[in-house]
Image (cartoon, rainbow, N blue to C red; front, side, top):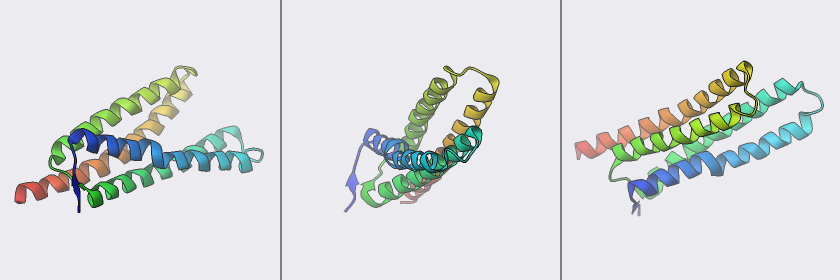
Length: 142
């Protein structure tokens, strides 16, 4: 049986699972990429490869989080859950972008990090919006 949870709890679950739990394994995979390919690849290529691995794990994290919510949580306010999930995530991702560009303030770093964090945001935004919009549609039909 699904548990009814507050909007804050749903947002926290979605953000935590998407942003920390599953991507942690992406960081571990990136570590192993660095450890085993670090000597044979160019530094720039290695950074790109590690970021691709992280993006893949982040995508898996979004999918897992939505799947978990669908199976275990009765979402009473999908519109609010979607809105606040996206707002909180936008704040977090913008903070991460700022933290990453400040120490190495150069044009290449700014452009690269802007693209990287934009991809991460899009990967979060589209499935989150789609899932909660589908729930909202079901709620209005009932």
